[in-house]
Length: 187
Image 1: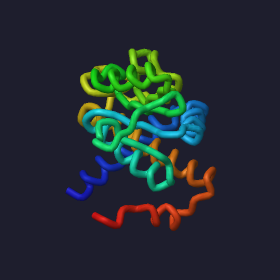
Image 2 (image 1 turned 60 degrees about the vertical axis):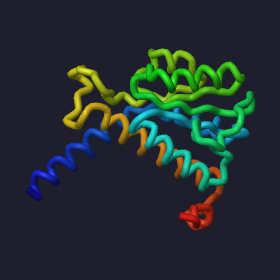
Image 3 (image 1 turned 30 degrees about the vertical axis):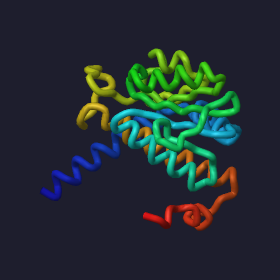
Image 4 (image 1 turned 135 degrees about the vertical axis):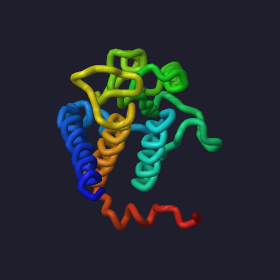
């Protein structure tokens, strides 16, 4: 059993390495710069992609950013000085598209992390970071994964966003110790 587990783990890590190596660093830099310039950052995603996005929102809060996960009761009004990051592997998720549309109408900059930049959310976004991983329901041989549908995209998106946090920490001169001081103490 140990050998099988190790083989599966290495298969996942190999897939992640392959996918993340293909992410365009210029796209990522544009998103990081937009995050730094935004007055408020709004983040949204559905399902497991939403869970990964929520984790990223928590890290941005630890960095001291004014960040909100769309749909939470304390989410304020969005404006033209803000950034809305909506993540969707397929680029077509109905509620994610709706959030992006409302943000765009309010004049906010819209960004997305997606596997499908050609889909409607990618077409609407000002900034698109492409993670070329298979998403749920896809049957593309050149983008196949041994994992359950969507898992590779979700994992890659989380690692991408965690790497962005490290870049932001460097740019903002924030140490892990300072970041830890913003961690919740009421849990």
